[in-house]
Length: 80
Image 1 (cartoon, rainbow, N blue to C red):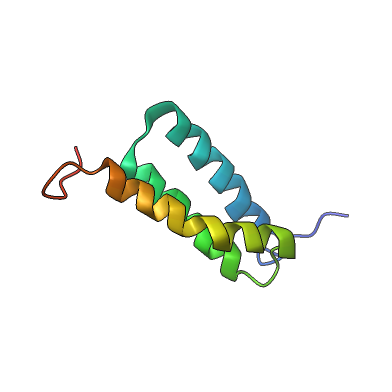
Image 2 (cartoon, one colour):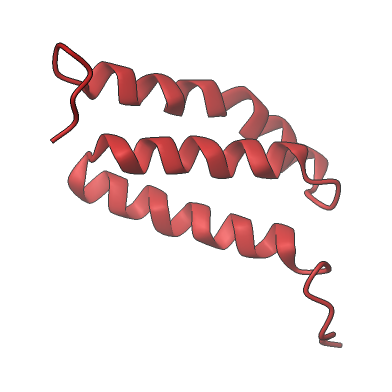
């Protein structure tokens, strides 16, 4: 049964966007996408409707993705 309540599917929408962002990051290695992945993981980790196992994985990995931006930045912090 499908509902029209946007809050009901918000965690699913964030998860779908996360998969999309991770796929594009795999193709490009763009550090800005890594930041977006990290933020989406943090959002899922904090969302009350996210299943526990997904929440735990996102909480554990969000820092790794945030760090991948730092690893990719050239000296001086400028991202091209």
